Length: 223
Ligand SMILES: *Cc1c(COP(=O)(O)O)cnc(C)c1O
Image (cartoon, rainbow, N blue to C red; front, side):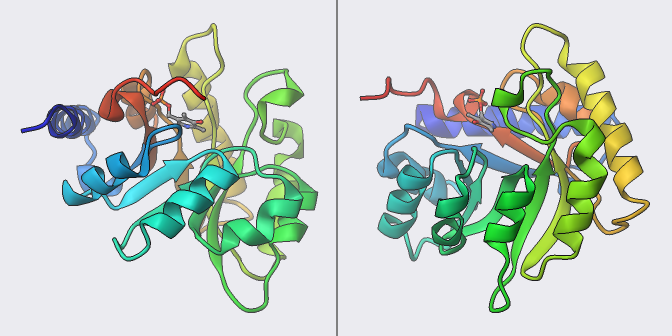
């Protein structure tokens, strides 16, 4: 087996084990392999190993890889900050947008022709630059998504804050998820958990893990 196959198998086994310990079925979990900065050839290798869900955080890079690898049956997840003026282009390749975080982006994603799955990203820090809607503006943004044609809300997404334990932050996400389900009962998804904190995320109810380096190995340095 290749090193990539080894790491993929190890992470899959660890996910299954943590899910079992939390009394959850691994079938409830979608693992999105985040391949930002990695070459398209690595994504093709992942596809051969049975990976279907690929995550990218920069529009131009995602667009290019999706075009190059069209035909492999991959589902592209956009997980980074998305400029409103690029929203329509992202809709051309993305199956899921994890980072809906402001009213202007919701409006830019509106479509009467097609539908895209999305998560509303919550900012768990006090730094507005980190992406995500502030928790006190969350309900209003969820309502706007629900009122917008072409968007199907899967749930909430977050990145754990730096410099504090991830688990309590993910526990807050679970509470926000319960809160928004009063207005969006179908939106049960929780996109959270990366290479270093996916165990905590699974324990707190994550449905979509976004795992990069634990599977891909270190990212090449940006050129
Ligand atoms: C890069 C990235 C990930 C994956 O991070 P790793 O630490 O490599 O697992 C997950 N989510 C987002 C939003 C990212 O940008």
